[in-house]
Image (cartoon, rainbow, N blue to C red):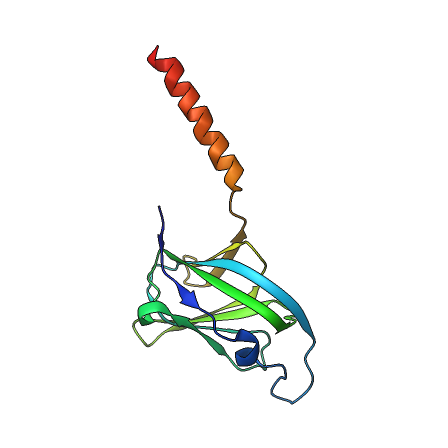
Length: 154
């Protein structure tokens, strides 16, 4: 089972802000997202930030114990009025070595998804978006496995 840590995204709508650097109005939408972020970079993360546009300020996601370990998952919730990220969100990680950062571009936030952040062989950011298996499918698979076990024991 994958390890999990908890992160808290406090008042994201206030932190992200509703205007870009130029002071222009930003289109917003009502969201209620419960997502899972997964760190598959191979490197521990000391700071995690998001922004909806290139000219917007970064908003920090608070990390439990100040660090997000590689191979760990964490739940992230966003709710309320949020800016519309026309080209997807940007996610920036500062790695625990303190010297290096990477930015993932075009990240699509949505409800009930797992966003896996990784680095390819050239150390370039890659993100995959997957949907967790429905709970019913897991129970059904377990039931089938039990039936097969009973038949093979006879």
